[in-house]
Length: 343
Ligand code: GTQ
Image 1: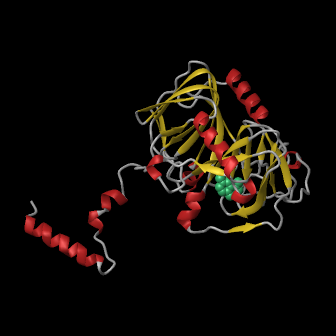
Image 2: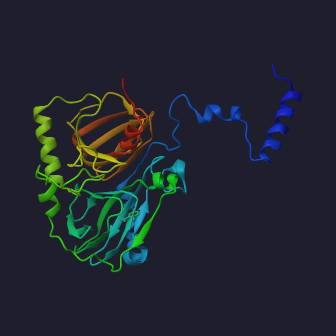
């Protein structure tokens, strides 16, 4: 037993240590080296039907050009003010209106786009414009010039996912503005697909950090999932699942973020699953009842769900259900930290 006089002696010692920029490890050891992951993020869902009106209001208040990126950040309620959807990932919903341009820039943060609503917008990456349709997955590798624009007749919305918190942690951020609002298109749409999406590479094509195939259209993703669901056995914990990969390495399309699409047949209920990566789900088709760390959440198409690291997840589908998900798994894997638990 520690006497109260010893305790008060320690307290005054600790506060004296603080005056010398010193701290006693034994007061914080359990928090610094926890027995299992202790994410700050909570399980939380954003309902698209509610967000959409706030996005459209932003469209009335500020132009894409003025905002540079007109985005509503999906901020985890447990990480308020920190622009994070999970402890390690940034996500936001970006709106572009007919005729607008979100000016070209580049940064060292890696970005993914998941198209949610509307046709007729494009994103340009390193001089190649690609159109965005709902369900398309597009990446903007680190340090590539990119701008967005719309030739649509209505609003176009997509989800942005970036590794912003990692770059912030490392204090490694660089960014540059392009000299014009839009990049001059010097490649035609489809070049990246022909070069890198046909299962063939040139002898001079070396493995790259990010996928040079930067657009993955939904119709192909959907067709691949449909085939797999007819020919393969379902994973009891994950459903049918495919991942967007970098064709030069077979690894994830981005060095810090893994992304993929899953299909759950009507009525399918997954067995509990958890992994060390924090993740985000966007419901694409069907309807989902999710239980995340004992929190019950219902998702409709276009809703977004944050899943903290190591939170146990079960999903129950009504109707054939398709969901997009992304996570920080590649960072865990590269550091030898990744674990999963199937129960
Ligand atoms: O489209 O380049 O949501 O630079 C946040 C930062 C989107 C973008 C975001 C960005 C972008």
